[in-house]
Length: 220
Image (cartoon, rainbow, N blue to C red):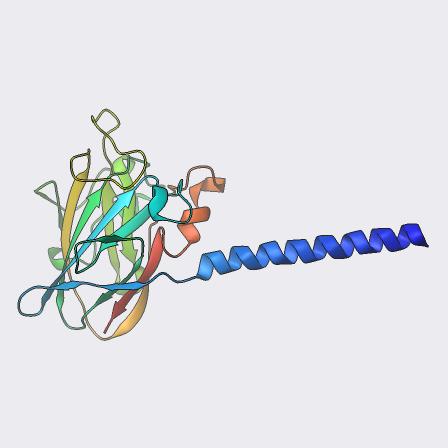
């Protein structure tokens, strides 16, 4: 009986440990970072400035994870993927892209969609699409039919940033685009490039964690 009781106790302890780990994992996935508002400019236009880093470093709770960051109205970079923009306005987005090329599994995502003119600029050049194998990330809001592919830093570029915080003296791509917001709402956005190194199929970890490669666009 004591042997059976010992096994039962061991199983009970294992169940408690597994439940605690699952709870911690779910809490980590669903915990919400602060919401950062776009910066007002003139008229009905605001500016939203983002960057992507191959490894967020000390700025985030998981230093090796790939991540987005956003600039606040004080000019500081904030580790958050929750952005607030006004309804019925133009949002001019600038993305400083420090990560390398990963490639898309679905070429459909290499087409710019949902921006003003269905275009973006990459390092000052107007573009409507990129070669699928040059993509590093995407900024996509499915509910708004918005897809913006972000080309990566070429592998032979000098002075690349491997760990954040990255700055503009290091190799990067500059992507700009403008979106027009409509009615108020809370819209989920996501990166659809499998860029989570070390995770199954590249879609685990930071790819499914708010604060890294997905978040919410608050239109208010």
